[in-house]
Image (tube, rainbow over all chains, first blue to last red; front, side):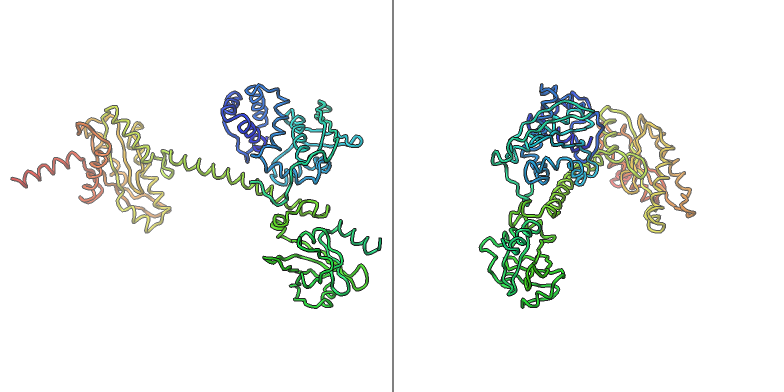
Length: 195
Length: 338
């Protein structure tokens, strides 16, 4: 798994729970390192071991943990750069949803060896969508549930999200878009760079 | 709705940074993004050449010259502070005598979006500007992450070099390692001999045959020293052509004298490099820890150095024991006073 993904897990734990919890988690995972480099690649097993250890150390169920990570990635000020890159994908939440299929390609444009889960969005009627997520690490559907929840907030849209389990090796997330302009949302200024 | 109005509305969507001018050069329609550059007053109704200036392909001051520019790539300045340059293209129409001008920021778009607080809605859906801005930002973020990684690797490398105990060229230990070994031996009151070796004529080899020859000589000298010492001894390269040998469990001068003699003898034979003989010799000074009541590393290194200096002074290619030197100066002192 790409270092950026592993690094994101590390930052989530240190930003939300503190350095000590992170160190406890890597020790528990027994992976022989305490820090991930964003620009290196690691074995997939490492990611799974770390996630399992974090889940144990924080005493959070694995699925909830992944959803929290997803939310963190979009809403925490320390990872503002990522929120901005996601906001480039669409002018409103509907637009954003429809651009999700392109997400892995967008990611590869920025970092050529970054492989994101394969995502497919299908519309099943007005404001109702199903998102299939196919990933090498289990639980990616929960992670995207967190991402979508936070992005909906960001755009000021009102959505109902539900992880519907696995179908043919993909995790399915149901998205009900109740209102596109429910709240103010956060602004997005094209020119403002995240620090 | 008139045909001209319909056309204007189409352009607002398809190319929101456009202007339509009438037959007198007055702006009759400005796209929403064009208007955003002039927040003070509506552009419609103003004389185009009062607000804008055509710089290339040539300076244009009269409106009838502008109409001839159809199909050309235009450089358009507009009078702000500082003045900004836009790219543009002009086509006749929609009505007879009118012209339509489509504008773009070109590469300065990155600054322009900041200055005018533009959003994705200010660009046509088919315009790749937003994708370009995404790429600029994504690449900068990736670049920054790489830069951070390089910085960490660099300092890890420096740290590793600092902690290194080996001389890369010869594979011998370095001064740091020698200092550590000597300090350890003295700490446990082990009897040791410290041999300071300096190559004679090494500079000549470097100067006449080049650094590659010099490097080869150093490697050969290292090989000789390894052959002539025991595996428990520490051999270190402590300077360009300076070496120190720490011999363990040495109570008298017999072993060091023998070893020094063998090294000097072996180095008498010229070392061949690419068919050229490189002639060096070794000057050596040795000191034994058993000569001191309380041996210290600094003192021993200084005394070995003094013995070495004596070897150099006496004509090079020889070995001096510090004990002989001190006996000699004692005799001299005696004859001086007597």
